[in-house]
Length: 307
Ligand SMILES: NC(=O)c1ccc[n+]([C@@H]2O[C@H](COP(=O)([O-])OP(=O)(O)OC[C@H]3O[C@@H](n4cnc5c(N)ncnc54)[C@H](O)[C@@H]3O)[C@@H](O)[C@H]2O)c1
Image 1 (cartoon, rainbow, N blue to C red):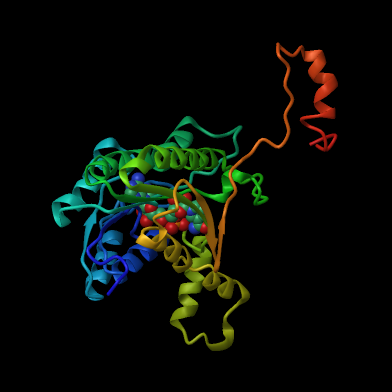
Image 2: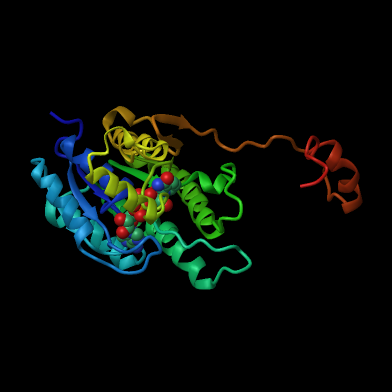
């Protein structure tokens, strides 16, 4: 008996990394899985059916049920077909995991419109398209689970300066706001919507050279030659992310809505929501000179004198 017997889960970007780990765990908990993946490179170029096909084959080998879908989440029609694959194959949809993602890093002063645009399309629009079409069914059946994939990057607290992540962090913080509001709108239909800010070793976070070296090492009898880096990559397995995502889809998590979680390497944390730390009020319009005088003594008190 699995915790999700009879449920149908759609996982986008499920051909590798986090999405693959999530799909395998959904299947092992008894869910039928739509394994969506465009099968491109980390920068969003290219396409291939094989990543999704490999995961479907693995689920079937485990005795589970799964179907592949190769559409891009980045179009309205793609999102619609991904959700329809669940309906056409398994006659329902209970869980949507918006996970597909790419990266096009470039410092803000060099970033092209295309680099900005494609990242918004895959992450932010991709979340919208799939959620939009899934929610039409969730509203009718008065139940559903949505788990979105944000990032710590948008919080700017990872010391990731100079990596050219402005397009990515903008899209991912958009996902957090989207999550809160979908949660509010859909609660009355028995639907929850939460998001994760994961940390895991995948092709997106581990360089191809390092991945190739690790793969080579794992083919040999590496015995006690495991490097610290290799151990760290194992410690940051995508399997850690899958556990929380699948938990959020169970009945046990029915009370959790609109929240964001840190998850990775065995740690799970609930983020607090932003609150006003200090404020001032005037029944009228502040003059700029008044703000020059009062802000350092009130609202911005305690900030360093320079950035
Ligand atoms: N790995 C981390 O530490 C980390 C941290 C923060 C956020 N994330 C997010 O987690 C998600 C999964 O990333 P990952 O680390 O597993 O990377 P990954 O590259 O291994 O997986 C992403 C998958 O999405 C697929 N994909 C890309 N564009 C698509 C599209 N338009 N339509 C359908 N599928 C598409 C890719 O083919 C790939 O299989 C992403 O949204 C990523 O931004 C990851």
